[in-house]
Image 1: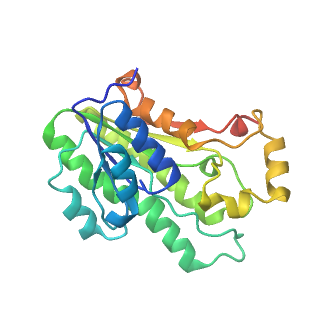
Image 2 (image 1 turned 135 degrees about the vertical axis):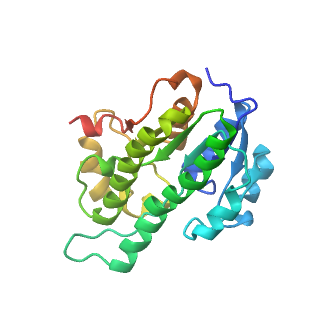
Amino acid sequence: MFDFAQRTILVTGASGGIGAATVRLLRRHGADVLASGSTAEGVAELVAETGARPLPFDLTTEASVRDALQDVPLWGVVNCAGFGGEISSPTDFDLDVFDRVITVNARGALLVTKYAARTMIAAGNGGAIVNVSSQAALVALSGHISYAASKAALDSMTRVSALELGPHGIRVNSVNPTVVMTPMSAFYWGRPEIQEPFLSQMPLGRYATEEEIAAPIAFLLSDAASMITGVTLPVDGGYTAR
């Protein structure tokens, strides 16, 4: 189903669980993958394992994103870099944490889209962008005021980008995963008092794996999804269907 031969795809957040799983899957299907993290050291092991090419940059700084991407011929992008922030309510959130969550999850993805899309348009070959959002953008989750705001912004940027870039043959979609038990999420979702009531409300009754998120990302990048753009795809075991 997936054939990414002759296609260069950037994956941000490649040092994380979902990002690394996505790099592995895309490489298995022939993609020329640029694995991005904040440092080359952070993706060195993945690069050695998969044959992906490292492309480190600081997505919180526009100059760093611009310098890294302005001359790179891309066919696809996966905006997977993310920051979980804190567990807090609207009455006790930390503004500095909120600002960083927005900076990484929303602003960073928008900067990558800005410069990647320019090279994609210039190449004239179309392409695809997939933003890794969250179920937190679709339903209210206690304690997730900052994270939910950042991912809801990302979903809105997905829709607007799909509208603006569609005439250039560039599709833009989001995947909205449920909890994946990565180190970023385990500190909260691994607690029995949180995990048990949450999973009891999910039809499939379990957390997702990194590979179960990577597969829909690859699908949305692929020609099998050639008529799909502007969607937010829950990958959540049915949680948001309640």
